[in-house]
Length: 183
Ligand SMILES: [Zn+2]
Image 1 (spheres, rainbow, N blue to C red):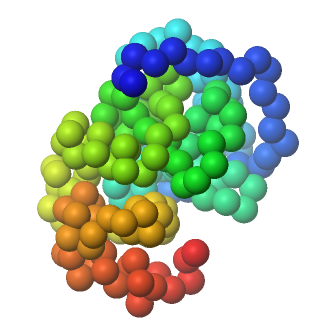
Image 2: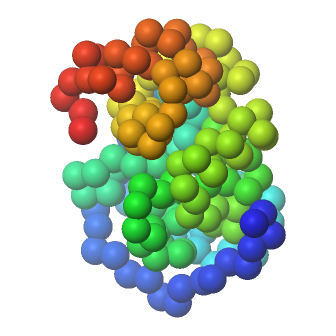
Image 3: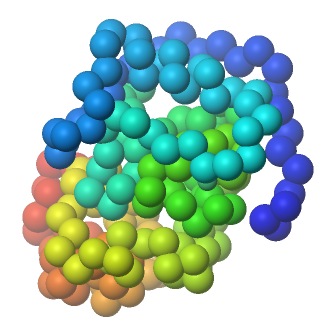
């Protein structure tokens, strides 16, 4: 699975407008169109090392981007551009390098995987934010991701561990007691 060949799509064109999502500040502030140019430069790269997203990141360390009105991880956006739309069912852009939480956006490291498969990968790699940082704070993109895992049978305490938050925090986020405005 880790060494699966990457199917590169030819010239992928998406008519989208995007801007960087930068909830925490401190990351590089992009000029207009800069994040999109950066993403475009990744497509077809033969670089096999991790490529860190230099712009805005979510609380769990994943690079974030806004595509049209949708906020998503850069990994997911890159996965869509390189591998096409996700297969049916809730799919995650998973990292073979285990460094999504360090903001890796190298398309050669990213593939579609089921939430279970991806979650297990993250735990195995010790790459969840929670494994390294006990005072993680949830961002909207984290909550959306967490709820997706929860709907797929993950337990609050495991989600809490993955993100490094109290299990009550993950419970409230999943059932919508907190972050009620999010899907
Ligand atoms: Zn990587």
